[in-house]
Amino acid sequence: MTLRACNQAANQVSQVAYEMGMFGNYQLRRHLYGELKAAGLSAQPAQHVIKKVADAYATLRGLIRNGRLGGPRSQWRRKAESKPIAFRPQAAQPFDDRCLSWQIDARTVSIWTVRGRLKNISFTGSPQQLKTLALHRRGESDLIFRDGMWLLSATCQIPEAPMNAAPDGWLGVDRGIVNLATTSDGTNYSGQKLSHYRRRMARIRAGHTERKNRPTRDTFTCRSCGFAGPADHIAALNVARRARVAWVFVNMPNDRAMESEVSASRAGQPDRTARRKPRTSALGR
Image 1 (cartoon, rainbow, N blue to C red):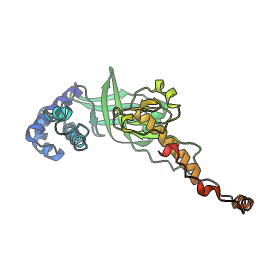
Image 2 (cartoon, rainbow, N blue to C red):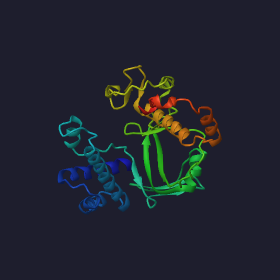
Image 3 (cartoon, helix red, strand yellow):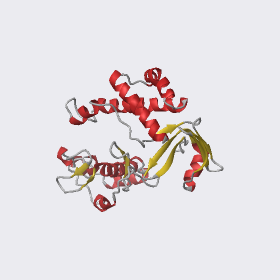
């Protein structure tokens, strides 16, 4: 009931914003805050509904400005620009601490609804999630209804750990649009399972570079050796390999005694290295 009411109000705000060409948070608040309050929303939920709509249009403008929906004649762009943004009846809704309070020790929450405030609602999570929640939760939380379950997504501010000055390995991470992050060990943090690609990823890259190797934005297929897979995953593998190679060369020991011995043994001999062409690593091609 609460999510439906908030998203119905969001669709109303979106319609007005689209018709008036007015997409700023404060502009919409001046024109529509009173109407949302009269429709039964409390002060904070009404402001969050307006901000959700403003953020959605800001995201859409960013996608258009960066060419993510194609050029002015693109079908995707024309479709996105031809109608107001619509919110699903069960779309997530943000709550701040005045509308949703956490009792961490009791593992309960108190939350505002259109029918009044509900108290002592139990929640749970993994031990690590509960520990992070107790130590680092800050700011808003999102109420989500997914697959028949009610979920709370809490904002946590976790301080950065100090950098490891002496790593014993490397992990490549490629950040993208379709896939939020893909690591060189085959983990996809957008939810897609890449297990059927991992054996392919172990094959040696051919070093063949050509535009046609990327038939689509999300797919890599080497036209020389047939090496193929998700482009994000392969990029992450390359990041890890290049980092490993760079680390070796930067930290290679420089033994002066050994250099002197080699120089003495080659005294009077022609310099063979002068005739050699410098080699280029396959990873750098």
